[in-house]
Structures are given as structure tokens and as C-alpha cells.
Image 1 (spheres, one colour):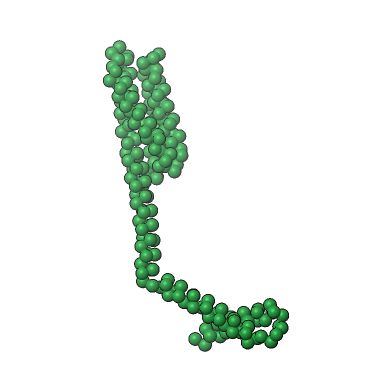
Image 2: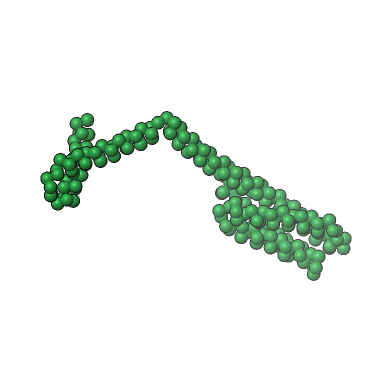
Length: 198
């Protein structure tokens, strides 16, 4: 307590000396300087005490903790929502590839046997629409931008495999090569997605 009072007295003394220097020591008003300095120091101390009392008040602590908890909860919920959306996309990728792969072979066999079917084309168009909806969401959800670039390349390979079937034709070996390169690309996409989903 004595040390605290000495610290206060030192503050008053220093402030009083500043007032004394400001008026260049004229008029013998040292007592006035001291009283003025004391008043200022005590007023500052009183404001500090009220402020710290307010900070220690249970209602203030309750409000602050409520705001902090709410912020953490919101952040947690946003992370969980993002993770759920990533996982949803992750689980759609392989099935799209499987169905796409099957329908392209179905179409290839149908055209080879001269029995083309509109059903195969419609199925492939439906898959393309679903694959495109995934493409739109990839750069928003995943940090790794290579996932998005590889997915576009993956769709391009499938398009290049599908397009010639009903036009100029494509050999079984050519189709196999294209679809195998798409499968390799898909494997890399899934690995990159898994790193962000787990």
C-alpha cells in the first residue's frame, strides 16, 4: 500500500513539476501546481477504478463470454457446413465417373452394332449436367485449385471420348486409352479432395 501511495505521489510530483515548468517558475504558485496535479491524478485514478470495476462485474463477464462463445460456435458451424458440402461432392465424384464410363461404352457398342439409342445420349447429357454442377462448386469449396483444373480436364477427356462415337467413330483401343487417362486423373482428384475432407 505504501509503495502504491509513493507511486501516486511521484505521479503528482512529476505532473506538478510539468505545470511549474510550463509557467517558467513565475508567481510562486507551487502549491497550486501541486493541488492541480493531485486533482488530475486522483480523477484519472477514479475513472480507472470505475472502469476496472465494470470489467470485473459478473454481468460484463457474462456478456463477453456469451459473445465469444457465440462467435466460436458460428465459426464451428460454418466449418462443419463447409466440410459437409465438401464431403457431399467427394462422394458424388466416383459414382459420376462410373456411370459416365458405363454409358460411354453402352453408346460405343450401340453405334458399333448400328443400333444407336437416344437413351444413352440422354443419360450422358444428364451426367454432364451433374458433372458441371460439381465443377461450379469446386473452386468455392476446395482450397486446392488443382482439383478444379483437373476436373475440367477430366470432363474434357470424357467429351473427347464421347463426341466421335456418334460422328466419325472411334476405335475400342482409342476409347480405352482416353477413359484410362480420365481414371488416372480422377484418382488424383479424389486423393486431393480426401486431404481436405478428412
